[in-house]
Image (cartoon, rainbow, N blue to C red; front, top):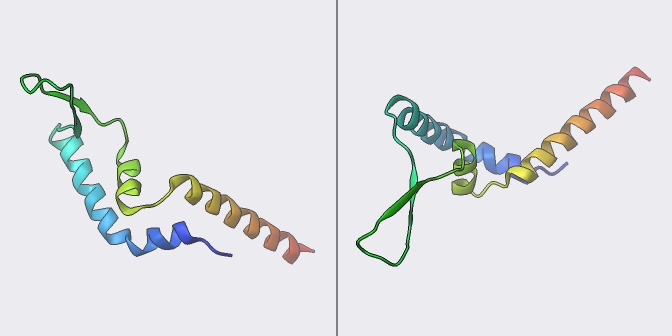
Length: 90
C-alpha cells in the first residue's frame, strides 16, 4: 500500500517536531500570536490579523503535506489492518 503523505511526514518528523515545539512555546508560554499583514492600500494604516490556522495546519503547509490525504491514508491503513485481523481469525 502506498502512503506518500505518511512518507513525507516521516522524512520531516524531527524538523517538524522542533518547529512545532518552538511555535507552542512562542504562543503559549510567551503569549505571542502569529499574524498576517492585510494590505488595505493605505501605508499609514497597518492591519495585522491573527492567523487562524493551528500549528498542525501551519506545519503541514510548510512541509507540503496534505492533511486530508494523510487522514485518508490513515483510514486505509486501519481498514487494511482490520481486514488482516479478520483473515487471521478465519
